[in-house]
Structure formats: structure tokens, C-alpha cells
Length: 203
Image 1: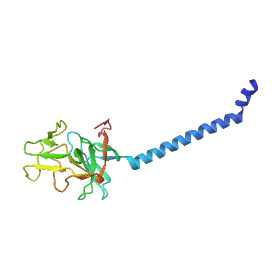
Image 2: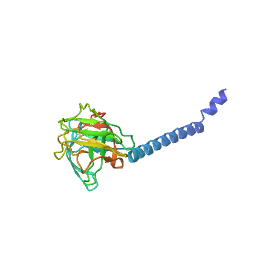
Image 3: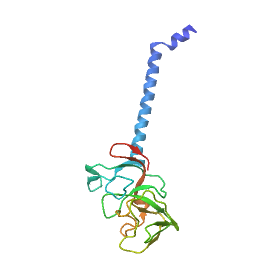
Image 4: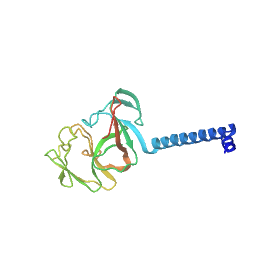
């Protein structure tokens, strides 16, 4: 037994164990970096909130962006959204999507999904499939746009219907130039909010 203990504790054996430990740590570190890069590239990314259309839920900032919508200068810092690119969308989710007529993406809330019927009339409420939504997160009253007495739409397959929480100051699916949003235009679903002071919360 003494000879076996001496063999295990030889300098060569100790070096072999040290090299093996270091190699394992390097492999784990490389895998962690690769996983983080893949998540950042294909699954998770962040985007700042601009404007006031999601008050009181989100605080919007003021930013200067380039032609690709990338922030090049921060004038007033707002909330930062952490998005999941591949999550399945449901009613109530906060999402970011692109529209054809501007470079900056829009941040809104999913009100209805494919197959749902949305009704907005002059009583200031939103009805989905005939049921009035209980929306304790909104600011203002929900009206139709362009002076229409009523808006009724059945959300097409592959689309969602979105509204801003600041209902009297939001350009959203009520407008003809936006309407129902194709899913391919959606950049991602928010699962984490970082406020200007760096504190985090879930939507």
C-alpha cells in the first residue's frame, strides 16, 4: 500500500492531474463562451425603449439611431428590454416588431393572436372574442383611430394584434398603416426589463 501511495503522489502524476484539471476548465470556459455567443446571436438580445407609447409600464428614452435602427447616441436613457427571439407569443406579452415605413422598431403589447376577433368601440374598452379585457396596466382610454366609431378585426393566421399601454398616445394595430403584425416582423418577446438605474424586473 505504501508503494501505491508513493506512485500516485509522484511529481509526474501530480503534473498529469494538474494538466487534466486545466484542460477541463478550458473546455468548460470555451463551451460557456460559445453558448453565450449563440444565445446572444440567435436567441437573446437587448433593445432600448424609445417614446411614451408604453407608459406606465415602460419608461421610454430618447435616442439617435442609424439607418439600421442601432442606437448611436443616448440623449435620455429609458428602460432596456431583454428579448427572446424564439419564444411563442401569447396575449399580454410585450413584443418588439418592425414596420415597413420606419427604421426604429416599435414596442407594444400583444392583445390578440391568430383567429381572435378584436372589437374596439366608443365605450373605450377592448373586446377579444366578445369578452372585455381587464387591463390594469394601461394609461388613458382605448379609442379607435381616424374618428371611426368601431374597429372590428379577426387576426389572420401568422399575425398578432398589438396595442401600446398608453392608449391615447400610441401608434399601433388600430392604425391602417400598421394593422395586424406579421410574425416574421417580430424581433422578440420581452422577458426582462432593466430600468435606467440598472434594476431588473419581469414584465
